[in-house]
Amino acid sequence: MAKYHYGGQALIEGVLMRGRNALAVALRHPDGSIVWASERLDLGLRARKAMKFPFVRGLVLLYDTLVTGTRWLVRSATLQALALEEGDDAGTGAATGAGAGAGTGAATGPGAATILSSLPTVATRLAVALFAGPALCAASYTDPDATPPAEASDAEKGLGKGYTVAVGGMLFVSLLIGIVVFFLVPLILARATIGRIDQGFGLQLAEGVIRVALFIGYLLLMARSADVSRTFQYHGAEHMSIHALEAGDPLTVDAARGYPTAHPRCGTEFLVVVLIVSILAFAVVGSGPLYYLVATRVVLIPVIAAISYEILQLGARHRGHAFVRWLWSPGIWVQAITTKRPTDDMIEVALVSLRQALTADGAEIPAGSTELACRPLGGISGDDSSGTDPIAAPAGAK
Image (cartoon, rainbow, N blue to C red):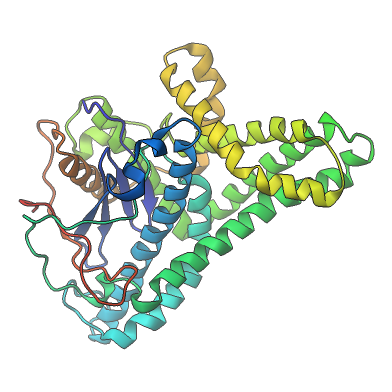
């Protein structure tokens, strides 16, 4: 059994796993193969001890989950869109795998289309992808002993020159929509109804109830989308593979298949705690003019996030108590929406991601685990325009 609590998030046709010192990503390529990459977490600012202090670590995790999670969401969506287009350009109607180049110019159009088409999925994942794990570090690394990856196709290189703008723009729009829908709209509706007769705790309680209703309604609506539903299946696969690891089982499809899709450390619990803490926090700031209430809702978001993370950590340490499990049960209930039973090929992707995260951490892989066929993701141009490969496979990777 792993001594460290691994966590992750679902991507577009893939899974990201966070370990102690590195993260790993595995994606199902349109050609049917599994490709993977790893990225260090113990470099740069995130490696400083101050970033792990209580009430600071929650903000670091939130920042990294949003930024790094969005970056990999865009990359995973881009891989699907560009690989499929490369297959069409080659006259096959399907992706032909690594090396099927469509040219640099072809990467710009599909990249922009991918951003627009994947916005609902990315926005949803920004709401439900806050899984337990260490703070993420955006810095990547190259293993000096790594086997050089094969020449990457344009599909595996990401968005090219506009990559930073694309990720930043999607993150900004998603956060803006999230703040307006889940913080400002509940405030306005509560003031227009309960606020006419109660400007005290009743107003904050009504605002919280409306916020919960909007959140659940949003998840139910998004779950009707076929693309989001598949992402929720990968979410379930991620949880099932972590269940198997924590139980000491071999990392196999059969072993993972026996576990539920819900997991007690899912970031959905974090969001449930945020909703509760926000009611109490806004009750403390009290009432006032509309501009004052709007300002407090925006300014207090990081404070609420930091406090909620510490409460979540406290609950995780006492999860063995029946009362704590009951108190945290709404997070499990919500996962009935945000996780779905995956197919075997989805579980395979999650297992590859988890194995690569264990390997990057130097952790032991459980005996009897299946060694699934996979290959390094190759070059990803990332945030620069040089086309260099900032992510490489550890030595001995298959």
